[in-house]
Picture (tube, rainbow, N blue to C red):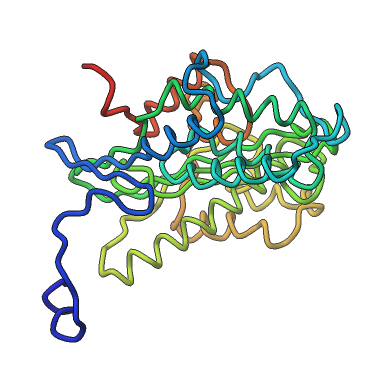
Length: 301
């Protein structure tokens, strides 16, 4: 590829990629690791928290944030600047995706409790400065996804948060955490909406791989921990009782019927997408981070 480009453009070969836009690349026999250690250390130095005590979770599961709780921050720009930097950090830190999504919802009028959550967030990063994604050559290219929803999880408007992550050959490639735009009347509806978003993501990955001349083995698996939502996607007779769900959500049912997507049940305890929908305790978060392929190559063996 480099030789082909050199025939058409004036280029310079800088060798193997090691650092690009704050992303550090390390190669070993295990695979390729992506991290943002220097970027994290810069955030810690900027906030004056290099000497702070680290915490093991980005958000306290027992703390709920509200739009009108606490006094307004006097320095709005500082909050916006820091949350923006944390948002860029999700490139190699999928474990902070949900927390960044929540903090981004208060960009208009941030208050003191929101700022305190940001500070806790940065203290969590101190405990995992070198954490990043490890990509291994596992010898297969199976596409699979995990999808989940936290029904009515937002205390201010009772909207649900959906989350999903997709794997190619056992390696994490895409992930998302997003609050739904409408209120779901049941947990099954919230989960089914999450399945619809994940179905679109799987179809995009399938088309991309096909353009790159890779053969995608079907069906692609989409793991869900809500049996009612799985039943809706698998049984067309059940749709008579779910007409309140918008028509576009039934894309999942169509792909299941065509054999493109399979929807096996997965226990909530090992539902990886759970970390993209809510704040978790230390033990559960650590378990799911390992399943995501998050490693700290700078930690002592």
